[in-house]
Image 1: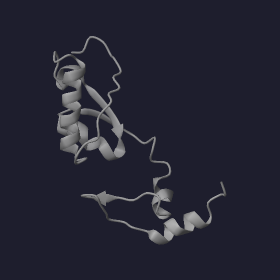
Image 2 (image 1 turned 90 degrees about the vertical axis):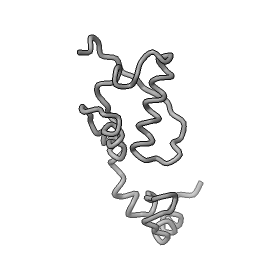
Image 3 (image 1 turned 180 degrees about the vertical axis):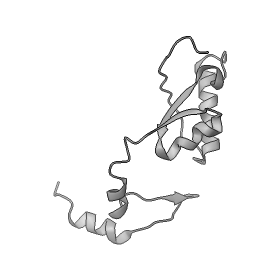
Length: 111
């Protein structure tokens, strides 16, 4: 029963664990602080648009209406194939590809 639509863009500090539940708590804390402590997140947020990798955050916030933004998805396959995009778990790389990184350095344009 929202009376108006407002677009909110919130800034965050780095999450200590980058888990969906931790980032959801961070969002809730920032919304509360940004509204001077007057509103809880669920009172002012009805829809979340998030990067595909972060779509689980809205689930942890209890937001049912959500949309995945694929803006940064375009080159992930290529970046992963060349070793530019690395995945990590607990700050340990799980898909290292040093050979790809070395190729990238060999063929990088001269600066």
